[in-house]
Image (tube, rainbow, N blue to C red; front, side, top):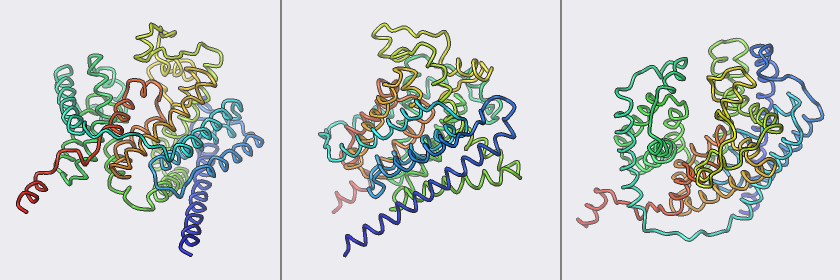
Length: 439
């Protein structure tokens, strides 16, 4: 009887999530077709060419990929599959149908995501040997890196200014920001992995002054580097660390995403404030990123693929980068006539511009293996802890690469952390030790 009730509850929750997905998809479609066409229709940024056949094909893929996720299982891998589904697959599907985009590329992305779902399902029982000797060393190393990074930032850039608080000044601040090459690597590790980890660890230990200090350091890093992603870490990581303990967290998170998208889209037709919110979050984070994926395909289907060029391992292998500018700058110049901008997009595009159609499958499998490693971390450290330290690193993949990052970037640090850190082997709190000694 209990199993039957539990099964009915899981089915109800899955159906509710399906309804949330459909509402979210419809809101993205209406916003793209009616709202953005008025603001960007004559600028050539987006193409408005609806295809009914591709719309129906997109519906088929959305239902199939949704059904392949085990929504009833509480694991980080399930949440991150759902996150990628909502953040990337659905927006890509909208652009595919409403801009009449390339069917081969769309099918390759959806097939790769399906392969990732299969890998996660097949790897659900794999046990990775845990080594519990490095936790204290990791903490010490992370604090040393933090000290090195922030001292170097101040020494090389002087006193910070508040210019980065003006959204129209971020590019000038960003161009003035300087770090030597090796500290630059540490800086990326710092704001994507190390600081989120230290914040979540401090929240778990109820050291709220430490949390405030770490958030302050993250804000300071934004004032120097003027990268919006640095600023997003604070609310995302703190919010996830606090609310992910809720059993219905997945459903509530995506319900919030759906309702928020509906509100800013519908109110954006009448009120400028909500249109600005729509433009800042829905368009830039979801629609623009999806549109750029097809633009990357369009460009690299007729230009040289870069393979491992531009990565640290590519340098070791002597592989030269085939272009004079960074990829994001080339895309901005070629398609938008804005060479001052850097049009990055997510790892699905990275897979193609590195290794073609095979690269799309490769990044899907790498994504699946990465979130399986996070599952293993969660077994020893808890669901909320695992989600809190890794959420931003996975979230930012919608606007960045996975191959470069996983070879010797921030994801390398995340994988190392997942394999070697165990909070039971961490430094104990002083109060706990004192109570233990007195007893």
